[in-house]
Image 1 (spheres, rainbow, N blue to C red):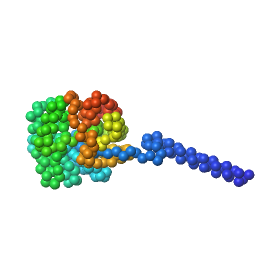
Image 2 (image 1 turned 90 degrees about the vertical axis):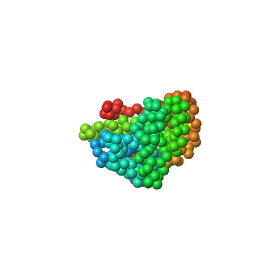
Image 3 (image 1 turned 180 degrees about the vertical axis):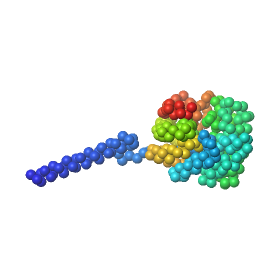
Image 4 (image 1 turned 120 degrees about the vertical axis):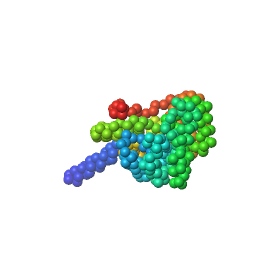
Length: 327
């Protein structure tokens, strides 16, 4: 009788243990979206930053340096190749180039990161004459090109301010010709989102000393970014039948300085491998000719969608409380 009781208890224990394992596996599937024994798919992304040296509600250059150093530390931690594009007007105070602002760019170069041109004062090509826009490009390279050459790094990429290359095909073609004649390569993007709205709200909350609101904004940032990656992945599959090598565009701002470590970890969990923009541009998708004559969206996925007459959801919108805090 005693042996029978012991065997019964052992059987219950084994069943309970098995049920525990099954429960853990089910929870793993629910929270990661990955089947048992299945790894996250391998994906590739290049990380690029706009509006260097810094976009912030900063009171002094020490704050700008703190943001810069935090960003670089995170990128180094994850061994990310980085391209940062510069608005050289941000280097000036009352029209005079400030050495402390130039030192911010030098930090990126010292870290081995490539810099590019983002227009002198971030003007939209659709709002100024083509001649003025060309002057914005040439004026936007006067400091950074020399710094890059002195550092022994290439200076070759141009990214359109507001990600707008012109709403008419002929303007885009004329601009492409001008850029090529000045040895520029266009830096496209396929994933972007309103990190600037989050960062503006985050900056404002910190300035007011509202740490609870700042934390709430930061906590909302990660799921928001995740929805944008998911949307780009789905859009890529719908257009090409596969996930292309993506190019993420975000800004050199405070929320990325404080939260991009979490962003990078989440990207790795989704199977992303961090590559250079050169590696991303080897994807055949970027060699597609520009043929759509009309207003195009701010990502290359949007442009390719316009060519095919398709529209897609961009993902979760910015939460209203973040918009309100940014006002």
